[in-house]
Image (cartoon, rainbow, N blue to C red; front, side, top):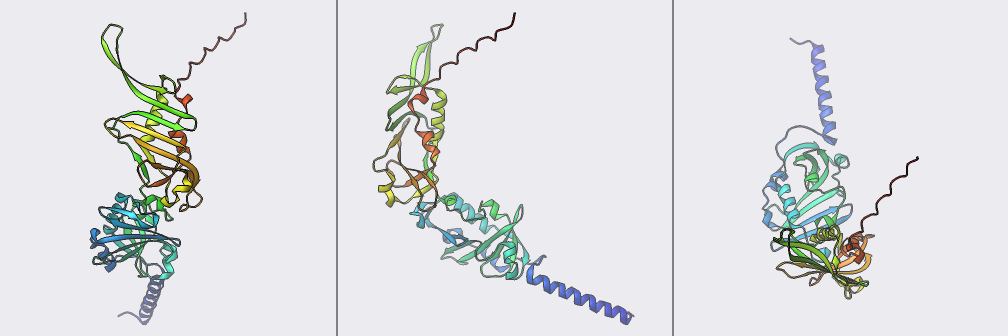
Length: 346
């Protein structure tokens, strides 16, 4: 039989263990537990029933609403959202799993960055399980992050890592979700010419095909790029290729309120760039004045739009240099003079 001393030590050990368990449950806990009911609710959501995605962090909020087969941002002039990114976010949310408890009370929320001021995602709609709120906390590991469900005080480690997978960052970044594409010309579509109109004049560059003969008398086709206005000369290929690359994908820094059209200078553009493509309508980019975004405070750039569209954009200032080339830039630089030989002493 155990002695009284052994029995007393056992009682003391049990009391210490219970105290440690109680203390840890107030702040941080670890262990294996069944999936929380909130996670099961998230996993069962029907993505098509989600009508709005609300993002908030640091007192700022951002809303994306489903419209037809895509998403728009009502508070940013009904700008189309990057629908693929939104759908990807929803897919990752619904696939979250592997819940491991990490905190049991609000005392741990600041530690894991899951307070009410941290990054929250709210899903709204008419389906079962909605609305649903997830607070996205710190990265826990390469494939894990900390999170909290709705008003529940419990903190969990979840997989996969939503913060990295959805590139959420540490602050709310509205431009990440906006469709800022001004022009996109796929590689398989041939660009056949450019017309650049600025205060300095008009420059026309054409893709020219000429029939000729080889030194041996065989017929041959030569394809070149030529400036045909205001002068005629063969264009510097490196400049033409640079311009082609720049116009194939033109992405703005942010969007501009269409109601600001009068102050952007786009009613009478100071520059027009026309891109001619084979078997298609020309694409015209209109350039306005330099200015500042009212939404993204402090961000400056050049106002622009694609002719025929009501959407207004703010391009980075360096993009004007990439798109609106000067006439002399198309000239082939003359060969450098030969370096005279270094005189040698007799």
